[in-house]
Length: 234
Image (cartoon, rainbow, N blue to C red; front, side):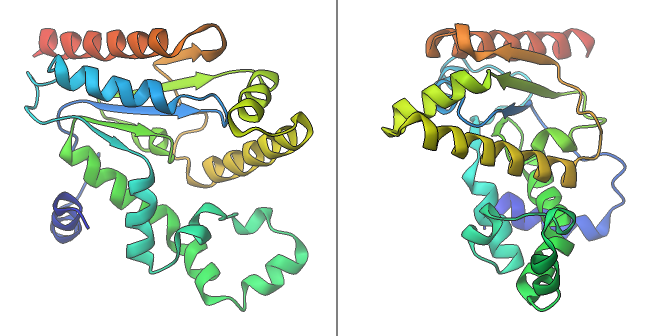
């Protein structure tokens, strides 16, 4: 477990949190499955660090947070990564699954504790500061945080199916089913953990007409403008 997460777990029982403590800048990016946003966001991290964006607020290198959250939650709950990836809230399970749910301790434990564990890990990264979340429901936990940005990167289903099929060398029929299944699971998961419905976004980007470079530049400009706004209001 990373030191800032360990420290957060120790300290969280010693204080009453009205809104999570967040340092530097917090960028939370929500995206549809298949929009192919990972590479542009990895490039964003490099560009933010190279230009020291946000360093006036907190001199700390930027960090991308994605699969790390799954690993940290798995450690806290003592469950496997696959179980977290395949998690479905109890209300969306079938009748047989609901019957089995009562007999499966790990699944029962996952439904009961997932939201709290996710919140704990996300809040610890908020305290670290200068982080970019790629999915993982982070946009659901930013209420009351002035230095956080919620950004949605979206594209049509047809575009996402084509992109997923091409990048994975799949036929369109299989890619279509995969995209639809992933969309359904993500919607169920976000409904389960969401604290604010609907989630307010500060910026929405249509991915279809943008190259990787243009998407990176768009995100970079928005984050830099947020830094300038916060410095102006100090």
